Length: 325
Image (cartoon, rainbow, N blue to C red; front, side, top):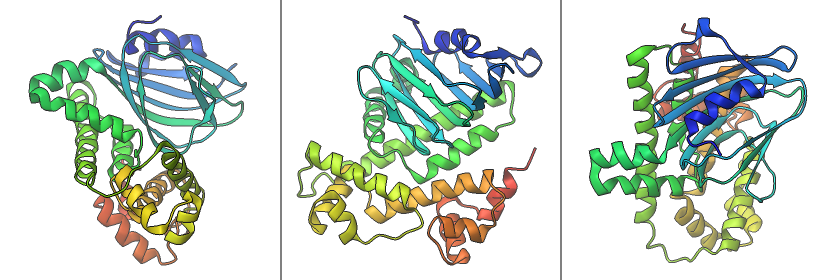
């Protein structure tokens, strides 16, 4: 069993059809190109002394392949997937497809299987934060309060789609800094992710007085609702329709959703739409009007206003920022 996340990633990548390009790499920042016989694309690993690691991947394998990892070091992984062509399995659980958007996973040293399909693009940005980062740096800085950040991560596994997360991941991916400035910038992004998750968790705790009990069956039903919304971003379902999917009364459904995810159903739905719009603005040539329509806004001006309120810039400005070298 590999002992640390750093040892695992740096020792296994070249075994997984990638080769290091020294001319594009530096200490702590490693750039890999997929070997032509296995596919095309790249993988970048930015490592910070076993505290946290960033992975930025964009590749297309020629054949199906499976990656198996078993890491003894506990860690938290927050990712933004821009494709849905891969799948994973934790321990003896069933295989689950990867969905576009933000996801959060807490590793407890279980074996993980990742599956990638032939001829299909795999594109993601990951932040892997080690247990030691919490138990050393955060504890020294914030004392026992650092435990709140841990609790926030547990909450985040239920509700990862914070609106600001999509924007932060795009900033990470676009970072051009090197050396010390890169370290400071990227560690700042880690703290920003933790701060936002902690804030959302604190808001959720304040809602625990809501007079509703949420069972395991309720959680499964709420996940069905979220899955429905993810597949129907251009629609605007009513609370009545969504509560039927959850098999709850409208009142109980809204209370259960807010208690579980720390926000209202429509705020959550808006976040799903805006995070998808981020990806479309960066990776497609579609017009702002077309993108607005794809995420459920018939009026491009209304869409731009909502986008700016959430991210602080207009859709056009955000798209222009992606082309700055």
